[in-house]
Length: 253
Image 1 (tube, helix red, strand yellow):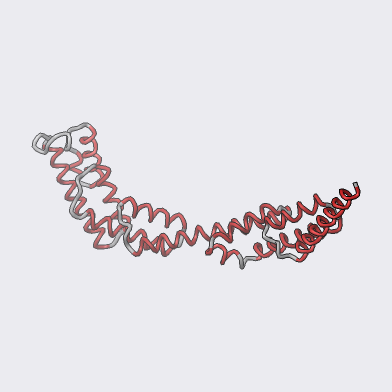
Image 2 (image 1 turned 60 degrees about the horizontal axis):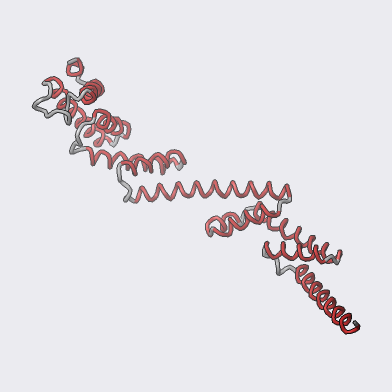
């Protein structure tokens, strides 16, 4: 076979995979029933891959380990004694590089690799997860801050309130977001606008407008505003006056 003459891992892996697909190699056939050239190619591939994995582990060479393990899967070769330590070192190297780079894509790929090889109990894996979560948290904060700014520009009170509440629901986000100028601007805009609405309702002396303004202030958690308390007091006075007038009219009739 040409693969045996070439003797390199790639040629041997191609030959072994071809034999496996054609059911000319284990597990379709026992080694005794397998063509001698194919059997020799399998044994030669195992030897080459063992050397490759050992060299990769010695040098802690991520690319070499990754290529060797990939060829193991590609050729469907039975698990080698060095495969487990090789995967452990590879995962460790990938996690270290991802943590050092602090890049979202690199961290996601390293975490996926650790999960694929079932090496998820190490401190490095936890560090990578924490680093990725910090990046995603930062992106969420940036997105919320941007949306708050847009809501302020539109004077969209409902969106402002929903985004502010979403920030308050998460302690980590709240602490970081509350220090952002976008958060403070939105809070100020919400409070200022509601004070204006409550004052307008007082000036109009319109029961419908008063009800609407009070309900809105209550929804936004702004019932401590002096304008809200004033309007509530006015509504109670008007209600009491209406009742007194109704009683008087009933007595007169």
